Length: 204
Image (cartoon, rainbow, N blue to C red):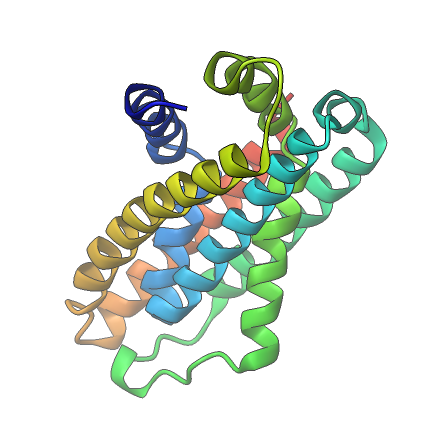
């Protein structure tokens, strides 16, 4: 795999990862409502889901994964329901200025992480993305060396995309100085998360 091919894959994946969608909206909403750690936890879950599909592709199972309609639908609906539930909780939450807002515990972070994983495993576009792109990147076979390079590229791109969303959302969060502003932002973020959950369900 030459440098030009790697850069082409990186560019294509960046467009895929940075494009507006439920994942990026949720990262922003989680960061604004609960801090950077919450946004990063969800983002990390999405990355794990992406890498699982890459591993399936490495073993020639992308087409099988693409046909696992029932499992993928259950994962998508379960993750979407959790997003909507979090959005409703955020909408109805008592406004707390961020400096005084309790940080989610380990269990809460694991739930956020697991939601990111589930929603990506339930995304029917993921296997199709790899099926369409990988043959043009690595040819007929995907070797261990190719796999390592692709993982490195994906991690680098996702670090930029997720990090960028978290940084921007964190700056917006720093403006939350009164309960009134916090309430408005909570409702806006809650609405975004509910919308993200609905968008996930509507995805075909």
